[in-house]
Image 1: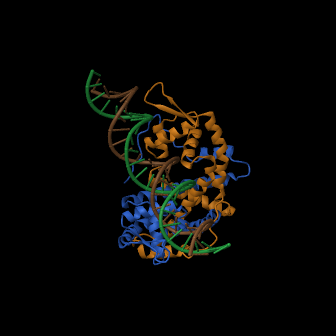
Image 2: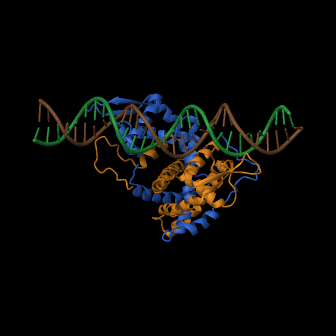
Length: 182
Length: 182
DNA sequence: GGTATATAGTTAGATAATCTAATTAAAAGG
DNA sequence: CCTTTTAATTAGATTATCTAACTATATACC
């Protein structure tokens, strides 16, 4: 699982540039009204975001599940007895019903979830975790949480406090703009 | 482009849970040695990361390009006269050579880049921006930067300062662990 | 110099995650 | 009872990846 960076250098290799040339590019190509300091900070956050998702991908790979599918399993775990229809799942995950159908197909084929027809309204399907699904979630979650936590390991205790306040603020702000909720 | 959240509620809708139930889940399912506060903070960062990429996707969509392809165009812009082979591009972007070939195919079909055979080593190909590619990058970048900047808009000036220090630290930390560089 | 190995790039074929549009079935509203 | 709406699925597409195989070329060594 550990991936080693190539150690030998090659004349064709593109050199590592770092942030500097990006800052220069921002100066020459951003439109007047956008703040260049914010653009730089936003770019750093964009890079960090990519890496954070990469870390989770890598840690979940050995379990044969992706983050988006685990998200659905966690959703079902948290909503417990409440019955979840494909439509409601699609709405919560911000995907189309067609996409939800695909995910549920995949999870059902592996016996992690089951579909049950509603008796009152025969158009509806209720999706729920199987025992196997619950066991699987219980096996994966410790890794999921430690993967989340691992990204914080170089921060000092007081930095974590401050970072939490800031991430919380940014989360609220971006959720408002995207009109999404969890 | 504006997407409206469904306003009517439905008995089948899954309620918005917020962070609380996730915190409880962490308490019951994280392995002893992982810090639960860090897991929570890491989860918030994971959510934020997802949204940050969503925002960029949405803003770039009207240009008919994705973030990963624009990344490649920016890479070529920054390396200017230096000749970039598909292998070097793959290495820098952290993808396989086969994936690089696909991306270059797509960009070449749209006349944004060209391939030129090396004269010294006939196995090698050099990829470079066309004039059309340079024009395109110049058109997209202002939106790219303002999209980056938009995520910062609710932070106070002093918060941005602190956030930059923290993101910088986290970036270094995660790049070290993933063994990647920019 | 000629064969074996390594390298650069592409191709073939697969999987995952999404989408839109069409289809099927059932319910609800006049 | 007919029409419209709703729920779910299917069909078919695109994008972004991957691994493994293949082609062409260069290098290395007896």
